[in-house]
Image (cartoon, rainbow, N blue to C red):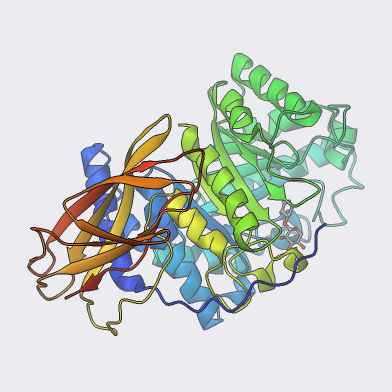
Length: 461
Ligand code: XIL
């Protein structure tokens, strides 16, 4: 695995509460326009990345460890940014059923109640997996193992019934390499191929509302392993075995880069009639290279209608299971990395941060970015400028469009450009009452460039 120096020193402040408010309103508007109901309240609590994803009809989550929830910066970053959580280890078999039929849910419950109190959704991970399996399971003979497996699924899913949006029912059942074979495990070796189907059928009887997923790694591109999973899902769909989704772990580094056919692979699974989810995303590296890889992944998900959400495998590099590879969106001091800005921008939220010079309070104004149309060679962007708790008489918003991309038109605002940074000031629309908003728009000729524009903080005058 590539070892990279930690990314540090990014201390730019983003007026979080104000940006979230603007994003929430945007989200509510989009959802209302799309006729989506019953999400009121959760959108508000989804946080910056969560809100931006929700505006695209998706969730954006993070893996969470219960023992870090007491750390103020960890919890506040989680709460400010994410709309879904996955317990990183706390729902695994060894954590919840260390002794047969004796269940302990306290650590996982702490995560679930934290999430619920903040309006976040929860992914369940994972019910049947060869790893993190307590020692009592593997010596069991087939009949006993079958009943232990079904009992485990039933007890855990019953405990969390109604609280989990998607369950990883079976995790990592296939081998790496070119064989396309199932991995040796107590379940495979004693129950045969049918254990996966049985696990899904049991799961459906327990919680008919949770999405039931098969989850694996090294299946992100098209290869022998993903082909084998594909054939299994196709067979399940044909025979009516209950499966709703496929999770792509998406642990990337220089030895295992984001595959060029990632989107095509997600799409072929979606075409089988299942949702796809990016379940454990982390990408080793730093700086703009890491940011560009994150952009690829987010764009791939956004391009696939049935890609319903993305989870990054942790909040901060310092607690990552691959911390040496600094693979996450926040560094060890909870500073936003370039990868964070890239993800937020790709999701259509305002990226880049910056300081509006105003301190605290309800702020002077906020800027929220959306891409409104795309064509071969260009796109239109729109920024909503919203006044805070007091009226304003003018505003300015910096928009960075990286070369070779070029802005070819701006409307409802007056641009001045220095290098890649275009600052757009009000034209006729500078006066906004408290809470009122206006928009400006711009056209970008991409000239082969792919990065999203970075929209900075609004400054009022
Ligand atoms: C990892 C956790 O992040 C670590 O804390 C733990 O020690 C081992 O498991 N695939 C999975 C996840 O499905 O459950 C794994 O999580 C990472 C690989």
